[in-house]
Image (cartoon, rainbow, N blue to C red):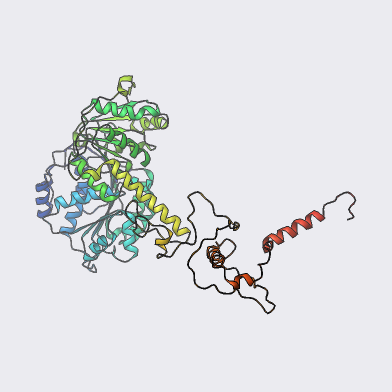
Length: 592
């Protein structure tokens, strides 16, 4: 079958292990009985010889057997299950009860970037086959993907969350699935997708009536438990190497202080030909800080994290693959499954919490026999992860000293961005992101207070689209009832006594005689609007009457003296309660 050394043990005949460390074997794709259209697509895409993991899996998967495959990252696991899927769909008929819109194959991936990568690789070899493929993942147009599923497809490449939404809404039916693939299954456990995976598998035909494939760079016991539970006598296939990491990766670790990490990173980058570099950071906050610092140092930088909108992430990743960006700063979102040619350096700005993530991170370089460098920083916060990493990879990573000259960057010539790329700068990406976050928080606060979301407008405009205006404009032009308070001034709870107003002669209609009762006593004016209402209208009326000087006003009796304002019901109850408490106090000479 191949020159790979196969070792099958009697105690566990379902396990197949290979010790072939060559990037490519002598076996070619035309040695298998593949469909002519699939073989033509492989030839057009430049795939001729098989990698060790492909040489082990294809003889079994093409016969319809279930497997759980483990091999180093970058060894061709994606092409192994794509060839199996396409050959099965082209060679075997679908279920009799299948509708035209029901998919026949489902590929599940833990991250959006990995799903996009799988769909891209599939499109490159199925162009001649006429099969339809649908890419389903979160962060993009929901209705567009919904219509794509309704129109019908043969293969679905999806992340679990978005696919479950469509299954629960009965947009897609998984009852006619012939083959299912779970890629990077261990990562699905880390992200909490296992319950989702079990839900989707239960919506498919029984394991005896479908083919199930599972691939990962690491197969833990919990992953194998999933394989044995939902797969039909799956065979475990492992491609062993002398080391867990790629052989051609040169590894080194520095021990900087926390405040030395960014200067050391810029100093090392300025001294090396890092034409395509990936920098991994543990948190999204530090992705922004590192990217801003590199951009100020005149590097062409892109960012890849959960905060960045999905369309922007796809555009930045495409530019990085085209060498239009020098550096990609990312979280572990980009550590799995992404195949980017000619990545020369990988920096672990933060050592990962999980030792397996270290293997996946540095696996972005030295793919398919190439060479690369992996540089790690063991700082004060994450140095405790280093022993676990070295234990997992089975070797001690070489140490390097943080020399003072390395903290001083060599000046670089600023590189002008191409036209139309201003919106892709790190500064503009995060400025827009912070604005959207602030608007979302403001809307949430308004919804809690029952006022509804704030209307959007241009920066500097007031809600409603006006650039100025105060209370009068928002209330339809009604006049204000008094002077506007300055910012920071708190309104008084009790009306202040009106200041004496000088009599100013104004033109006014004939003054009305104040209303009196039968005895000729002036009726007390009824107050409206509460205790804090301004008395502008009453003051203007009194001013007009004083200025008029009519005989009727002179004959009227003087207004009654102001009466002390009685306390409200609440204050009266408080006062009565205090008085009763004081009366109960045991004072000298008081009888109890």
